[in-house]
Length: 566
Image (cartoon, rainbow, N blue to C red):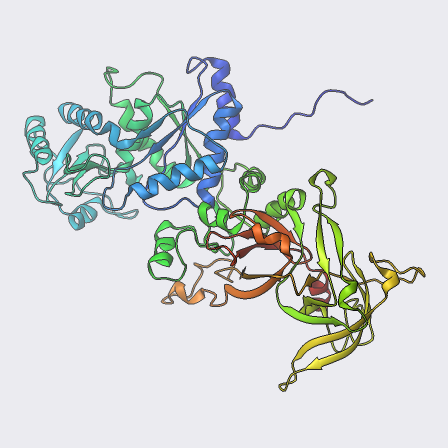
């Protein structure tokens, strides 16, 4: 007996929490999430997963998601990064219900800090950074109370206000929460709330010389925005008690509505052959190892976009990776599979020769030249066709010829016959070499009766090659990318060895290619399948008459697999 009921997808643990809260009416039937990046760099593929979760969960349950810039560290933040974050979120297909900044809440964060001081829950500490670290102890050594921990509320309030007024030099004093200096969770050993830092802020200018710490500002900002579910990556799990502590000290509900936000952690995304640390990505940019944050070898969203990835492919990847409670490492091959599937279904087909080898048809006159009509997509007739010139002088791939053909080789070789895609059958009659012994030209004959690509006598020709007509070929630069880090885990290096040593010096190869004429007018960002070669996108470096294409991902090469097996 079969059921006609639609198949239901099982819920992940975050969805289960949200569904239960909706059912109980905990937040009055509301779901409100937020995506809170720090604008100190460009977003990467790991952030893309977080974006899909934050916005996707809200959309699934009819809720809203805010975009909030966690701009509490003016030394590393810039409006450039704010703009790039907004662009990346929109490009991925999402929009925010409200746009906020942690700096919007600086006055309220300050007021709440004064409130905590008055409640005896915070104090001004004069220890320097090294002394604070020493007094805190570690996982094996209990902490010791700061000698300034028992200052009176009035003295702390006076010192904090003078900190705000700029009376003290940078680093001379901090505001700390008064929790438990011997707590087994290091995050609760009187954590810092404010530090003195004279730095120009991209939004507030020089109005403040004290700035809140992330652990303090984050939860308070969530509560001020009435966030219902604060979704974070797993490294914040040990910070959750501190998140809750800061909010729960508002005992008379003077600052925050009830119920308070709930922090939920999910496993962050790690990717093989990839560095995901913003700090190390910044190093790659600053040291000139890559051409910028949008270098197609970078795991940044803008780098993936420039390489030719689509938002649909990245969203599909995030969905396939799923939402887990344990950190995991995704294979970069899964990401490549997602973009292959998307472009296989949607990219227009074109012919391009990456490493050209001249092919001359000796028994074909110039007057016999003709046009071949080829489909723009083999499975989508609605995308139409285009006409491609064919004559007696062509370009084919160097890799499509072997002077000594191995077994199962169905491409060109001396005496071998192949089909030129949609055009005709040709047979290799002569191989021309230069003084160094390199093959520079193949002289072939064609069968005029095979015009269109099939032999009239029914003879079987297994090999089909792509080609480009020499007279009408478009000259282009094609950039071929390999992993920047050949090692599966780039950070798994021997002690004392610099992680830079694992960088692949051959991660980018520039070649001069020959393209069919229809690609002359391709626009920046357009994606194509170069038949038998892979998927390519037009790079912003393109200029009129000088297009540049980036290889997004290669096709699966069946012959390479045969050779690898020996």
